[in-house]
Image (cartoon, rainbow, N blue to C red; front, side, top):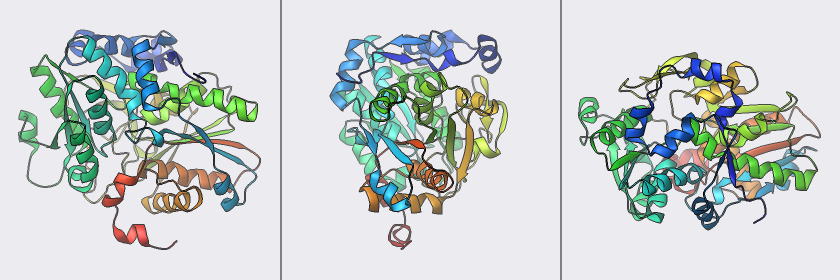
Length: 413
C-alpha cells in the first residue's frame, strides 16, 4: 500500500549513547519486563535506528485506516488571507478518534504473544483508554482503565466508548489499589501521575496483567514515528520536498509531538522551525525545570531527566482541555534543552477560538489538545509568508464537547 511504513524509526537512535546513559541512570530492565511485554522493553532500550514492524501489526494498522491522509487546509488559508501552504496530518480520522492507537496496538500485540491476559492503562482525556480498549478487543484481551476522576466525570462519552469496546473503567484515585486508597479523599484531585501509580501497583501484583503506556516513554514516540514517516512521503509528493519550513504539534507527555517530529529531527539540518505547543495550565516545557523526576506520584522507580513541574503537580479542578502530564518525554526534553525544539504555551481561550475557526473553515471538530497547536499555527501564519507549514490533528473532539461549557462553545468570536 502506498506510504505504508514497514519499520519504526527508533526515537532513542537520535541521541548519543553517553547522553542516554545520563538521562536514564540505573535502568532496571528486569523490573520493567515484569510489568510490560518483554519485546516492548527491548524496543524501549534499543538504540537501533529502525525496528521492523511485524506483518501482524501492519495488518492491524491497515485495518484501522493507516496510512492517514495529509490534508491541505485551503479554506483555512483563505480565511487567514495567507500565501503560506498549511497541511495537516489527519490522525483524527482513525476509528478510535486519535493517534493513540498507533502507540497502543504494538503493546497489546506483544502482550498477547507473550501470554498476558489483561492490559492495564491510565488515561486522562480518555484517548489512551479508548485506544487500549479498542486494541484489546482486536486481540481478545481484557482491559482495565484507570481514568482520572476529573475526566471520568467530565468526559462520560469517552468512558462509555471504552466500555463499549469491553473495558472496565475506574475513577482514579480509586479504592481498587492500596495507593489509590491512600490518595482517595472524596474530592476531585486525580492526575495522570496518580493513575499511573495505581496501574503500576496493580500489574506488579498480577503477572497476567501488563502496563500499557500512551505517552512519555521512548517506545511510544518510536511506535508513533509512522505518523512523521508517512507525512514525509506525502509532503514530497505534493510539494516536491520531504520537509516543511515549520512543524507544529501539541505536546502533553510527548508521543503525539514526538511521533510527528522525530523523523524530521532525524534529518533536520537546523533550517526547520519545530514548535511544541503546550497548555498554559500545564507548562512543563516553558516553566518546568530540566531535572531528574519521577514519572508518577508514587515516587517509585527511576527518576528520569526531563522538563517537569514536579510529579506531585496539582491541576486546577475546572481544567478539562487535555495535555495534563506533569513532565515531558525525555527525548523531547533533550531536544528542547538543545534548542532544536521551541516550546510555546497557549491559553485556553486561544485554543477554543482556534477550535471554532477550524470548525467553521474546514468542518473539523478537533480535540482540545490539537486546538492548542492550531492556535499557535495561526499566530505563525500572521508573521510569515510563502512557507510550508505542517501540523497534526491528533484527535477528534466530538466526545469532548460535553466537557466544554456551553458558554465556551456558543460564545461568538
